[in-house]
Image 1: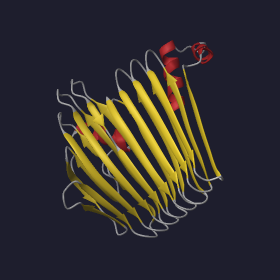
Image 2: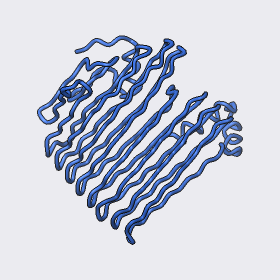
Image 3: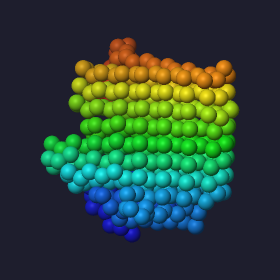
Length: 308
């Protein structure tokens, strides 16, 4: 078992809720290299020949198994791009946990760009969690630019939890998906920015098959001078249903931009977009402060509940 230092342990806990490496299949990447790996009879992890990432192959019929692929970076000035491809066989039911944590106490920018592609087989169910976290008191920035591509076959179901709550100075999050007949994609994004941080979230879901559906929901909080942009495009190319929602709390001098795009190319495509951006309601603050909380404590309680 790989021995982790205290920084690595803290980052691993933040991005994957792990105190140590889990049972089952996993691949740990640290400071630009794969440093620990485990496979199972049903889940294989193979390094790409050019060293640019890994292939994760899940056998058809695999049930109640998980794979963890966390990335942690503690070297200032390190920049990398990693390509990870997931091949999920038919009739599977699996959980995939990813995420990247950066600790930067130096002067150079640290950046991780992870490109993940998911090929989800017929009638399979996938739960995917991706969490980003940054820390460190150095002048160097913590930059994360994830790209996620999803290709779902007939009758498949994928649920994605995309979380970034603390410490990332700049991020461009790009997600594209193509759904076949009867496939479903659910996305829950939770995001908070502060200081002068910037965050761009772009989703494009093509509903190509009859009875395909998607629900893309973003909850975000923008503080201080931070700027957030949320773009959601749903393409209805068949009889289908799609829903996108942006719900944001804006504070201080922050800025939030919501850009909807609905493209119905079929008369039976039912597409909906909702967006709400506003400050914390004064009556909520007053109610919590009447219970003995300070204004700051009341704000923290409201934000915590909103992003839960």
